[in-house]
Amino acid sequence: MASPTLDAERARPYALALFRIVIGLLFACHGAASLFGVFGGAMGGGSIPAGTWPGWYAAVIQLVGGVLVLTGLLTRPAALISSGSMAYAYFSVHQSNALLPLQNGGEASALYCWAFLLLVFTGPGALALDQHLGARRTARPAGDTQRASVAA
Image 1 (cartoon, rainbow, N blue to C red):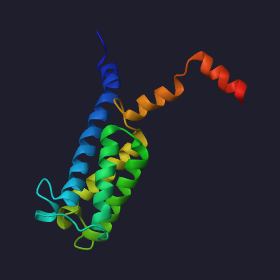
Image 2 (image 1 turned 30 degrees about the horizontal axis):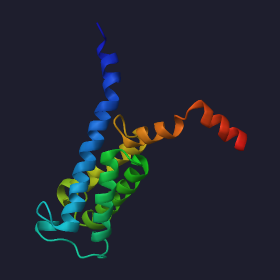
Image 3 (image 1 turned 60 degrees about the horizontal axis):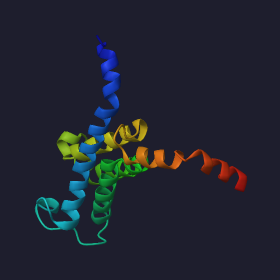
Image 4 (image 1 turned 45 degrees about the vertical axis):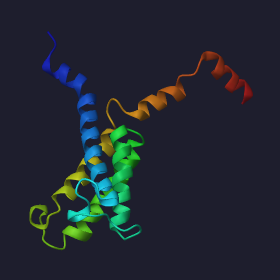
């Protein structure tokens, strides 16, 4: 019989992948809503005009960063940029209204900021495109590595 600790260790990369996928999907939906007016649009309807500072740029980061995190492609850099954009959103938009996120409406910004920061340090977990692309780059036939070293 396997120990619960061993089972939890085996499940950890998949639980982290599920966390990454859900966070990325939700973040990308925020960006799509703001950029394209889908899912109810930005702030109750419509889309943000292109080039509007900072909303349009934040929406681009949300959409692109969310898709990259969702797929597990360039997860750490995408999560770092996404975390920073949510920290900026919290301190520039919400924090001036009140001290605590519950009071100032910044709960989503704070949670996304910390969730993405966690992914910066833990990595993408299982089922990430980075792992598949990295495996392709490192898995060369033996003849290819010899030719590469001879050519060098």
